[in-house]
Image (cartoon, rainbow, N blue to C red; front, side, top):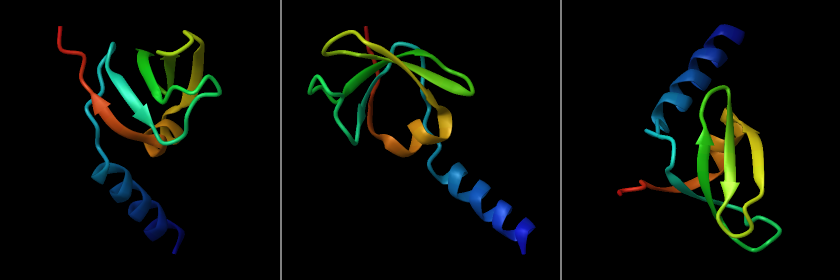
Length: 78
C-alpha cells in the first residue's frame, strides 16, 4: 500500500513538470508581505532561491513547496 502511494505521488509530481531556468520570473499563489506576487529565480536545486521583484528580499523555499505554490512561469526573454 505504501509503495503504491509513493508511485502515485511521483506520477502527480511528473504531471506538474515545469521547465524553470535561472532568471525566470514566477507568479506565486500568495503575495510576499511587501505586496508583490512576482519572484525571480536565482538558484535551482533541492531548494529554490527566489528574489522578490517588489522589495528585493531573497527567500529559500524547498522545491516541492515552491512547485505547489507557483501559478505562472514568465520566461525571462531578453
